[in-house]
Image 1 (cartoon, rainbow, N blue to C red):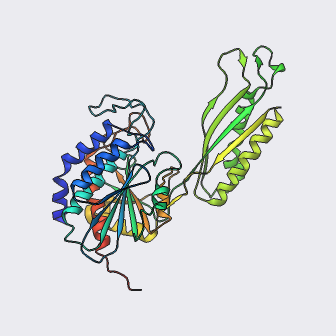
Image 2: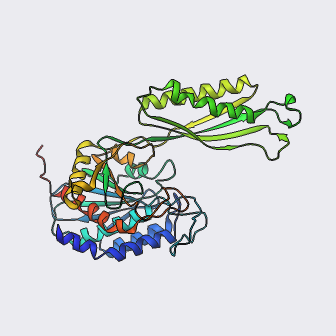
Image 3: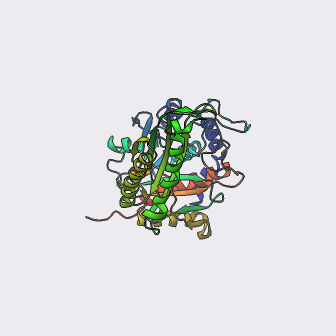
Length: 391
């Protein structure tokens, strides 16, 4: 589709401008008001009907000729509660918020796809539903609410694209089946009896107890779980005490559990509870555990993953398409994948950047924006061009 490529190439500077505008004005989960308004004005300027969905989210429709199979394209909108490092000209102007995962690029890509699709709506059959989704980074997320509010009503397939620092710019990665894990969260409060650090025998030390909990919990992966089934248990924060010579009365710990398997998830939750309570008891302390199940695992429909890989190969050559191994990150696109046939693809943007996703100095290679836009638009057009199956 050489004409489509020329149209997208003509948008290269605009894509960068959109992306940098969003990057300068990041808004964290459930607070994407300015972001939503900018996108709404743009979509309405294309003559598209737009409606709010899931709070700050938006649903727009590019209506083609009668017939065809309705398809949806999704981009996430929210930034992270991170203070950006570095001195880029487009650095965040909102203290404590930064687009450190690429969502600014995702929005620019879907806006570009909207523009080229709207310009050719008299040249394809069916309709394309554009979903700008809020709150991907914070549970319970926005995808589940968008589905509940009917964002996918009548849609036959949905595609998402995530710019990916771990792939060279311009390459495309996807998986047939499980692609990203279910990210659960737990918090632990260990209560002991505080006292002077010089007289530990008069205390019940929650710091010592917490240290043993951290060590013992790692046995869930090494000794309780089938080694052929992926599982991650990680602590991300431990807080207790204020000064060097006082043993505190309590310690708080938080962490995450990642897996693809419901049975492994249940095992990890059960063993975490048992280990925390038993280790605490052994040291004379008490503990409370809160375990919160997060997004479901993101599982691509194999046929849709193959379709997406085929479209990418047609655009960029088979050498640019890779089958990737599942990763333990989480994505609430999983709720879309449970609703209709679906696929998420990773689009490489790793050239010219050294910091991973969620790092305060994360950036992306803006040369990825134009080809990623071409891929998103092509996924919709190629899907709509498929023969309609007879009942």
